[in-house]
Length: 494
Image: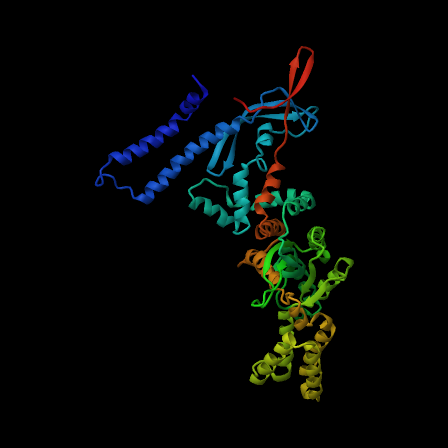
């Protein structure tokens, strides 16, 4: 009997079940057979999954080894448990496989050669299933991910398992992050039409359990001192850092801004001075400039001081530094509101006029500063003190940021004047996933941010290839030849 015949007989039960199901469907008349097409589709899927799972279980079992002694990464392991049954999660449901366990010579934690050779992820998931769960978790909650498998008629992991897997994967990613991110960059080609590279960073506040605990402590202390009003309002939030590196082509005559080619996005959980985020942006930029030194470098952000501290470094010495035009307009609007009132038609009209001047007129920012200075002089007396203070704050803002606000010149050079890419990244990367109703985070933020960053940078598939390969290990078996031993690579069981 050949191997193919043996394989067919082994799965005869599953195939026979499929055959009986299809035969009964064909033989039954329309009146007698009351199963709808939807029911037919669901049942067929269940039977097909059963066949798929039997084949997967048989194939996975072939990755086990039967030798008494093996070697992994130079360490010797001895068989300690034989034919132990374990269930694994696959993309078509769970399967049960018998495998052998080996402990280190001299004692220690056991290993499973089957899992090591097959690349089983975190001791439970086949690579495809792990990738699917991680991908879903980048876009949905753990409960939604678990429910989706139910909807797909697949026996999937529980919500707690879905929540745990990205965290475990993230630990491995962080240990190898720099090498793997460099490997991803090396696989990419900079488009020949690229003319500009723009770097931006920003942050978004997300609910944080540690932050909430700190806020409660401060409020409790403040209450004792009758200072509770100083700590009113939202509390328990921490800033998630977001960064982008974007390539643009040259601006066309009909375009208002240079067309965007591609963007690398990064998101990091709250950390001191966004240290890891800025390192990632540095590495991304250095990788691009090492190939294309001719690109025009643009640093673009809002007026936050910490952003410009980052850009005030040697790598950005030749960069064109631009304050996002949208944020400049917000400050201009606040200045006009301080002058005329938020609901004033005259104030809104004055804002629209100054906005166009700021954007399109050569030296427009200087005209705006002159106008605000003139307006400030008009707000005299105690009656206008608060309005004058608000207006003065906006005047100081424009004065401090003046050198980064020559928007007419930037546009003539075909440079972007808005940080819409980083604004969108903050929203899609962090806000949409981390700030859903009732959410509060502790240690799971980075796992989700990493997954979403890779997805939104079109790097997910290549990143997963690196990740899944890290779970695969070589196993060498000892073969005895009299008093001599030979080390031979483990092979798949026939």
